[in-house]
Length: 137
Length: 468
Image (cartoon, rainbow over all chains, first blue to last red; front, side):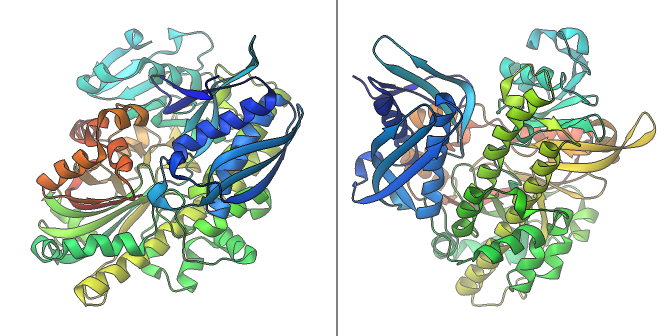
């Protein structure tokens, strides 16, 4: 199964659609998609590990909170990530280990300022889950 | 929605409130025919959405650099009554107090050209830029809180800025009543390491030549050294700190919309009544981000001065490197405006819009490789646009499309052929900001000048660019 793809949208700057057979997978793949924008992900070695915990009111908000938290990590810990391992997940709670290396602007991509609600859609499909999310860049 | 536009003059277009249900006031676009022809229908639609919000004042304004943004287009103004109105994180934008500082010099083009190949790398080294760039300041929590409250006064105390810099900054570099307790822990964590960094995307530091002066008297009053002298333009904002404040309050205000039963035509327009807790808290937190950005640009101004000192072996005062002016173009302000002949307190949301008060400087940045302008504010702007003007060229192409369409290396070579030296952390930045991805800045300037919402003082053309 494809992890994610970029969606053409006339007005939004960057929109992705991520897929997963399970909740765990769709969260991991959405993060992978977002970091494909933020950095040159194929050049990022998964050598340093950070643990992430997020809570939200429901699964839609949990996805937004997870991506937001990862954007903040770039600023706080100077990290680019390339590997995501969601260890625990429910509709309102997520715990993950994410792997990457110290951010080097030479391996940077496009600065993602925020995750937006523009055409945001989180859905259950026949094959699992699908999320459509756009970023303010 | 574009077909509903009514032409008032060659530069003004009306969207009367009848064009859709629930519009409370008219919307108005300032643009010439060429800009209107290219305008996105979705952006025009967004103006009419904002015209439906509680307490909105007439008109909702689209400026000539208008392009689709989150909720409200970039290049737009929404004003709301200070009693009945709303305040909105979405209408202000994610990059709170994104703005421009213009620094003058008494150096000539020839003097700077002779050193430009040394100057650009020195600036690139001294002013951290790019995604994931580290700032050299090591702030403590307490120190950050002082930055948020005191704004440029903190930078003066630490020796980064001068009292004169403060005098030449919008809001004198400090918005009062900023309250750090209204800012999330996450925002503060993001703010600590990033103070004194340029950022990425459309942010830049540019060495420019004054190519034309249109208003000698004003140019002189503002201390410019005439045509053929060199100025520096710095475009940056509140970095991850401001992005986080905006995101946090978008969530809080989304809940407020339900709590106060506000009807929204678009979920992105999350807002809160101005006098509600959610409204007041946002304003206090936004002011923290505004002050952070003033300090961010002040600190980088110091490093720009240091870089010139290193390269030209003179002190910055002897090069007259004073701040001409520093403006904000993503901000909410509580101002007094004349409405129906009477003074009224108004929350003005300027999103990709510059304050244009009579005789105050207005800065409009061109796209990379094209000219930028210094203008002066006018009484006409007070009457027509809640004292506002445009902020830049305005995109015509999304960043994603621009990256696919242009090669960063080719963009750099093209610029070099025009004599402009560009340096970025990696080539992709140059492609997403390719000049072709933007509207023609000259058309934007023609519109603001002809409508009189700001008047041309000087035109600056780029000599060298540093990008994130």
